[in-house]
View (cartoon, rainbow, N blue to C red):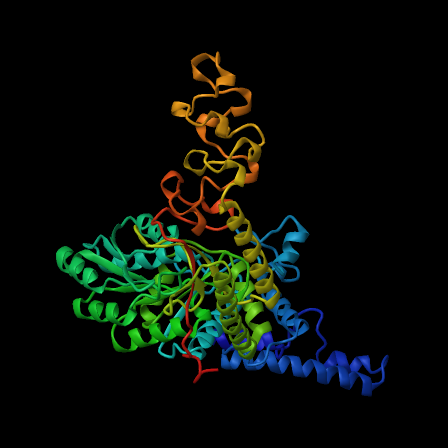
Length: 561
């Protein structure tokens, strides 16, 4: 009954249409001022817009074609007029009446200032906010529809929450803990990203970290160790096993199907961090496969990473509608509807076709990025890692205590443009040129200088080793010309020599791995520079040359696109 009244109100087919709209009676009266033929054209245009709104409310699916901004604004404003703070002659005497001091703030939120949910359930309808409640319901419905359209067809329910991915994982863990009060452990396949780890701690649970296995260039799931931990801890003591799909390379998608099979066997919940995996058909394929055959309780993804909206929202999706309902009931109090309004507007603007086009463009740019990074790598004597199980990211120095290479990262995410790609490749090439130049041997004048260190001529006076004239002076003592310097201090010309700091011209020379021409001097040179020196991250995890990484994106989308 309530749903029917909300539909009639939003469609303007009651006797009390929202202020500012032209109903049939008003249009008839307007014929006294404007010719009826012109008014009919205007009315027909209005009918087309109202038909789009009616189809959305009736079908509760994301439109195939994106709407124009005027139609979106028409609907959002009509929804706002359905909230009590927009009622004419309203007299609010409650403790929360959506009173907004700044008109600028009110306009920023389209007047939708009541938020969503009630004190006991974030998904519950608010008596004072029929418009906000309807917008929230429609956003959840459209989001679930587009997730099913992208390939997760067995998804039963979803909940868009005004929390980022990490806090949304906390909400899921708290719900699972309530179902398993004697459990306290979360078995977590390592990913070097703080949000996941802190979500376990914040939920008051104990993380059991499982190290990744190196398979070729790629870091993969240690399924055997996960099974061992379940056996050691006992299934009843485990709140959940937490896996990851989207992550910076060289870590690949976790082996969801194998982990899901373990969770089904031992009756342990399975929670998946799918932070930016909605934009990858490959990630969604593994989620659908694992959930269909075995067990996934929920998977969580960010709204900003997947739908190009401001940070602040996440989507919790499950294969059991009851569980998603319980997650909503775990949220204490009302919540901001800003991330929900952002996603609502964006989905209507994109439409299903628009979103799929963005995914096609992302995949194409990913392939171009991999090719061009390979070209740059070859040009500078480097190589590109193959991480075929990571469909988005190209490299990162994490997730492992002793990865055998130094490398950098790049990712082709939704919304990336060809301009972004070209600019990055140009800067990467220039950065590597600078790095290689700094790696080169010192000038010929320094030949014979101990351990191939630069001569004063290449120094700029300060911060260099003594000149060849001082060669032979034990322990870098100054030359005879500097005799008399107290405590064996070097002369002004050799200030800083004892610390072996190179000049600006040779910056990086003493801090980097040697070029092929400097073989033999490696024992006197420290490890490569830290990331900040050339704009990339690097860790001293081995003696290999820096490498870059990319992956192959399998065509899981062929039957969907």
